[in-house]
Length: 153
Image (tube, rainbow, N blue to C red; front, side, top):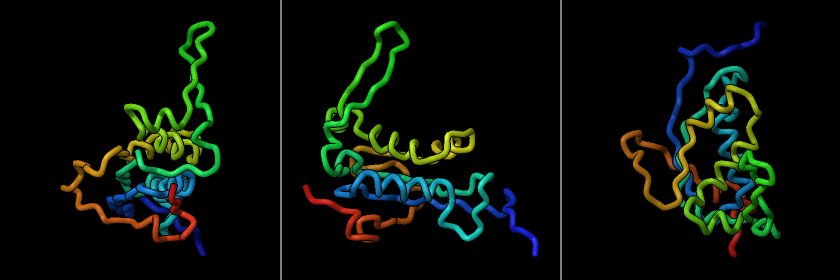
């Protein structure tokens, strides 16, 4: 019996929309990462980009457990003494709250060229509106998958 390997002709990509309102960030990010890689498919091949295109809406209403809202996120400007930080709560309340979801998903993918390509199939929107209606995305109910996926403030 030979091992099955998917070819580019075998790959079928879907569009999925996920509502992040009230969903715990880590659980949401792991489900999105699985969808982007294509691990939910029976024909999963690790070296092929066979995951779905994922649209996340209401990223500003994502929930964090414990004291993760106060956790600092660091980056460096490239200049001497250029270390900067901002807490996760400040980022969520700032101008680009979708970056919290993007960073969480990015860190759940392997750090290689294929993962960087797969990240281009992720679109995150802070509000409830997205301009991807022409792709006819299916709705994925992450909140209903497991009762631990949601959290009320």
